[in-house]
Image (tube, rainbow, N blue to C red):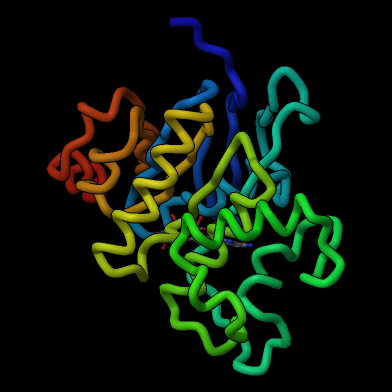
Length: 232
Ligand SMILES: Nc1ncnc2c1ncn2[C@@H]1O[C@H](COP(=O)(O)OP(=O)(O)OP(=O)(O)O)[C@@H](O)[C@H]1O
């Protein structure tokens, strides 16, 4: 099987004032990888995602999109975020927010079709007209995922985005992500504390510890290893 890299981290390091988060991180992520990123609270997982998204300039090293940034389209699903109860968008508006048409009446026929399909796939179809501010926490997380997927990314970052979901919803959404991973070669970076879910869905893992990083095929990631890593 040929592997084509989509993202490369070279000697990557981030230090906040007097506070090194991670250093000397080297990693190549290939198209179609489903990489779980694990490690204890505060070890630097979100900082790494922000660096990959170029929201944060690394202190050392570099992040390279391959073959170039024009070929990498990123979808990002954040950790749970509060939304004001009177936020003036329906769920379907919210899902289409990043498309060129922006709000439902101005979306093109193709964009509307894409929004409808993703609402169906994420189980939001029945509540598409509900104001997003009235949606439950889990429904909002689904809407964030749908918003990221509707743009057909080839790199999806899930930053603890399934943490607030019930087990059935979590499984449904990760099944969908896995289907896109396997059928469309979607590359997935899955930041999680849920080791059984990481083992179920990922192909590879990256474990951050205060001592350094460890990586490998997902079969090598066990709950014990994470606990040991967390005690370093
Ligand atoms: N802008 C910043 N300035 C200074 N320190 C920061 C900044 N952002 C994050 N940190 C610190 O860097 C460390 C890593 O934070 P980060 O959010 O990346 O951890 P995490 O592994 O994602 O944690 P969690 O599992 O709790 O979400 C933490 O100690 C955090 O307080």
